[in-house]
Image 1: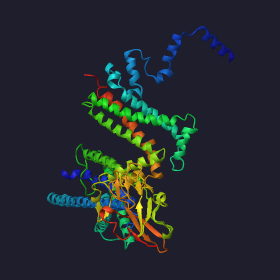
Image 2: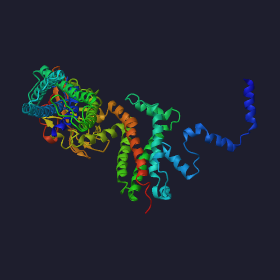
Image 3: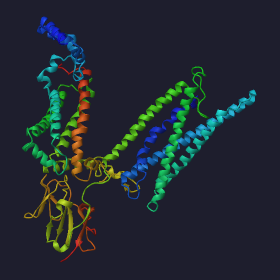
Image 4: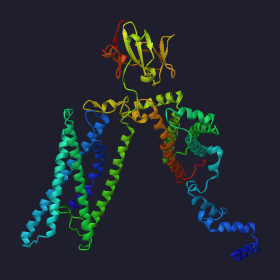
Amino acid sequence: MLEGLKKKIDEMMANKPSPEAVKNAIAEGQIWKSIFRHGYPDTPRNRIMAVLSNVFLHLHPVKVRHSGVKMSYTWCMGGLSFFLFLNLTVTGVLLMFYYRPTAEYAYYDIVALREHVPLGIMRELHRWGAHAMVIAVWLHMFRVFMTGSYKPPREFNWVIGVVLLLLTLLLSFTGYLLPWDQLAMWAITVGTNMARATPFLGYEGPGASMLQVGGVKLVTGGSDIHFALLGGHFVSEATLLRFYVLHCVFIPIVAATLMAIHFWRVRKDGGISGPL
Amino acid sequence: MASRRNGAHRFFLFPLSALLFPAAALADTDLSEASSIVSTIITLGLAAFGVLALYVLFLTGRFLLAVFKESMQARKEAQAHAVHVEKEAGKTVLSAAFGLSALFSLLALLILFAAFLILTSGMDFSFNIGLVKFVISAAVSGFALLSLYMVYLALSVLWKVAFKPAVHAEGEPMEGLPGGPAVTRRSFLSLLGWAWVAFTAASMGALTTVLRFFFPNVTFEPPTKFKGGLPETYAIGVDERFKDAYRCWIVRNNQGFYALSTICTHLGCTPNWLQAEQKFKCPCHGSGYYITGVNFEGPAPRPLPRFNITLADDGQLLVDESVQYQQELGQWGLPGSFLDYKA
């Protein structure tokens, strides 16, 4: 057995591998080929293959116009919004390792995240990233409007974009409650009180009083959209948990799905619009 | 042949029946104490029962009419051609099964109608909750029987297709359901299509019950009624001892007591009582209220509401926050909005 091993080592020493040979051996090997179905992306074909055969890149256009990457035209605001979303996802998941959404602990966990959790800047990154994302999304919308990129054939992508704007604002709003301090409590109290005035669904809204059967009101303070949103009649621990789940699970999943559609449609609707 | 499409029609019952899920889920609720949303769901579910029943009745009528016509026609033809018709043994079993299921569905229909009529008549059921529960349970069982019947119909179609495929030439109508419409390959596939649509619709309908999940049955909030201690323990002026727990100020003046809501009528913040300036001042947007609760500055659109305040049997103040009196509606003169009490 030792003889055989020695023979193999001798063989390997005899054919000294050049860097070129090593590169070829790897790029032609089964492991490489099984992961990347194409060669090194230095030919037009391989470059296209690199985008098409990658699950993340395939949402992206195979080829982008020079004007499409011109910063003075696109401001890169869509890309920045997505970058900030990724940043918020990573920092947000990290924060979840310490934060407990209960009336007893929520505020102290937020303080702890700043005072004695390692890398105390994590919560600050999340918070400032959130502010930046709202600004970036607005600027992205402004740019798309000013360059007329909402016009056919991109009109449906504009619609998806508007929904994404709404989801961004909802993420911002639900995250607002989580520090559980006086500002959070009263900001959410004020904000959610608007839900009471929702037409038909809120008990103080127009039309709600019309919804009654045999004199029994259907939309009351205990059965309207405001009650469902808060999990009670006013902002309480139930609301904190509700907003936590919306903030960390529900809205991000919906937003990420819509983002995938948004990016995919950029490609399907003719790529990033260019200057006329 | 119009009757061929009957089979497809029947499967419309499935999406309709999806409406029944919420009602079935809540059938055990005590209606006299149910919240309005629960009774709405039950009422809607029973309305769906009613529509379903009407539709089934319509179908049954048309069905029976067609069977009657066909049998009359067949008898005429048989007489005309003098053909001897042999009675097959299998047919007896099938028609017995059909009769049974028809009986069941008729029974179910009757109960459905009873439930529907009783619950839409606007009668007061608080005197007999047991009866209501019985009717609702019976209606739900009736629906289950109807479902069984529909499963039986589908299975009998499958049976025909599976075991008698080669006898017929392509496009020729096969023998259909017992006493039912003829089934061809095309109409069967169309039936499957409708069944798929119906299944999807029913699943989506059942999923809407998830909405109910967002309305908790129990909230961990302070009770709306509380005792405020003996009146002698209050000095003239604004008392803040129940501000945190019950969001209520108890104010005493020379004539007596009133209980003010601490919820700013602008956007719901809690104002502060400023003793030196003798006013309630909201820190959020600057609304100001007099000690009476009437607004005089800032964006607040109306005065703070007052709560019902009375004396309990043991001589303590009793505040009921579920009863509110609004000044702009002229309710501050009503009994209960103010407690006469002179030391």
